[in-house]
Length: 227
Image (spheres, helix red, strand yellow):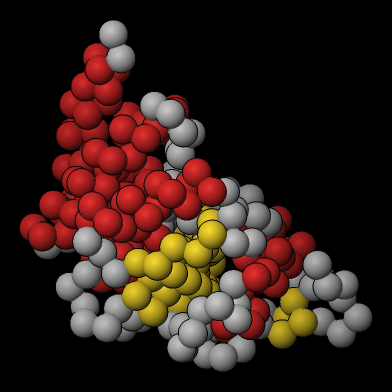
């Protein structure tokens, strides 16, 4: 009985895939790696809630393409940190693309053991340059060696908290790219109570009311509480 729903999901996502790759084209080799990743995700989704079930029919546009668009905002970035990687968006997707970039590495930070196990298997089956860190975000700064070019997060925490997580890397020269939803203006207003920032907002290519918040500098406001 179980295989039927999965087959239906795969047939729907095949249509969605074409739309997603029209928005964010990739090489044939990267497409093959993404196919392996999505097949694995659908297999694990039956046992572990990796993405919202309601988004499965639009898995490629809602999750894959949404992740791929980050690369156009940091085209020369080789070393990435993805905070709260969960189901692999954007971390595993970025790693699939960066396989073709010499010296690239994506660090995937995840505190839930079951999800970290999935991420490790995803990196294995796609043969992508990723390293999974099973840890709380606050414990990873010292664990990740070498310079970081870009820090990202998706559906993880309010913006003012994400800025706090990313601050140590941004102060060393990294760029922060946070995928946010329709409440981005309210989150930015709240964040400026804690941080001095000059955000750049990019409208999501995938439509809807999604946004990408780009930050190149972060400074804590004097007297603001540390979280």
